[in-house]
Amino acid sequence: MKKYKPRIADELLKKRLLGKGAVLIEGPKWCGKTTTAEQMAGSILYMADPEKEKQNLTMAEINPGRLLKGKVPRLIDEWQIAPKLWDAVRFEVDHRDELGQFILTGSAVPASYEHIHHTGTGRFSWILMRPMSLYESLDSTGEVSLKELFEAPEQIDGENPLDLNRIAFLVCRGGWPRATDLEGEIALEQAFDYYDAVVKSDISRADGVTRDPERVKRLMRSYARNQGSQVTNTFIKEDMAVNDSDSLDTDTVYSYITALEKIFVIEEMEAWNPNLRSKTAVRTSNTRYFVDPSIAAAALGLGPQDLIADLNTFGFLFEAMCIRDLRVFADALNGKVYHFRDKTELECDAVVHLRNGSYGLIEVKLGGDKLIEEGAENLKKLRDKIDTTKMKAPSFLMVLIGAGDYAYRRQDGVYVVPLGCLKD
Image (cartoon, rainbow, N blue to C red; front, side, top):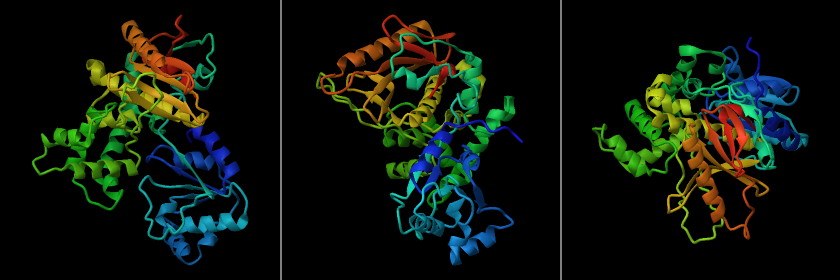
């Protein structure tokens, strides 16, 4: 039996159970939702257990309360195959009037809401899990804490264990828990298996609409090529249409993207809108990202050596891996990750904004002194445009890099941190 690798979601789950009667863990397939919930559960009901599924479904129809009996917190895994359990859990939470009673996990494919009559507001808390960050998969040393950067330390220290070849492998492997226990080609196959499952069945199961697998492949390839940008659905449609003999409209592209969002394959990033000294217009389009960089690599049919041979594509996919990790870390800090771009094309790859109004500005660079300098100058330019009479000044500026030996604070105060040194 593989040893459980602690997840940042462990602490989130513990905290949420202290404040709500039930917690629903959502996220992409294979990201570890059930395994994480099992660590905290007092008792477990596996709704999809082949030996008991029929019996469980019958009981969910005639006496759902019986399925909810057990030591708390009781984990109901694959709850969505019997949607009536949602209202049964809500009813039990109300009548027991105690916290930390239930954990619900399930497939990334959404439940049918036909039999759900209440939203669960006030009774349920939601956790979004993503594939593992490099810190969780034990590929980062964790010597530099994102939380501590908000306190603007005078000095940081860390040694990067990752070179470009290893980073390329980690991009293609992704943060799938099963893959993190494997090496070489076997580890890389996990992302291709995930991609195949999305293309062949999961996207159609998202909303019951049958979709052409070849068209799904074209969409995902186009999306992968445009990761980290704010391209429109019309642009993606035109990119797909080059290889699509049938008529294709923007509404169809929108429906495909929405389906991929429903099953947590895509997680787009909202724009950050700060108070600026000038009247510069801020672009508000979402930035396109898969929930894990390995999905893009699989959609493009790329392996680690392909990335080494094409540093431009490598840079975009490395950025997607950084965004994945920053999102995981931001959740632990009660924060959210945004992007910034104005009409003058001044950009910031990531803004980690906390609930208390503190924020940090981050540029992502694959590595190299020239690119680090470029990123630092960009961050300072944006910092100087922010109107600090109307909002806080940034807590920190950071260039997040792939290749580079050490984490350090520059003389101008900008932090340079390898992703292989970062933690929450």
